[in-house]
Length: 109
Image 1 (cartoon, rainbow, N blue to C red):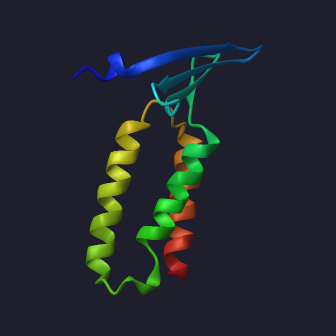
Image 2 (image 1 turned 45 degrees about the vertical axis):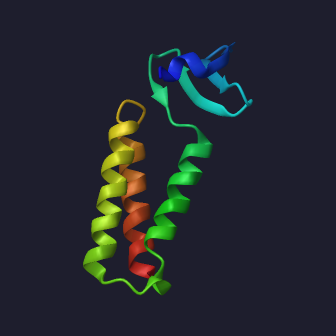
């Protein structure tokens, strides 16, 4: 099945400095939300960054009873997939801030 055939509504918001593209499925659930700035840069939505940090907290929590190597393996798998998906929307400065945040949160775990 073609995933694009399941999208029933596509909305494009135009503002002074940003284009926002939203796609909803037949149930009204958002399946895509992309921001494109007039400079031609894609940006990651604040909701996506919040979900990212929440997942990192979940993967690095202390009370899961897993060996450190298993935690690192799961974390690497998640980070590789996340960065592959968002590679065009990540500015180097954002990547640096996220890397620093992960390292700080890892020290507290």
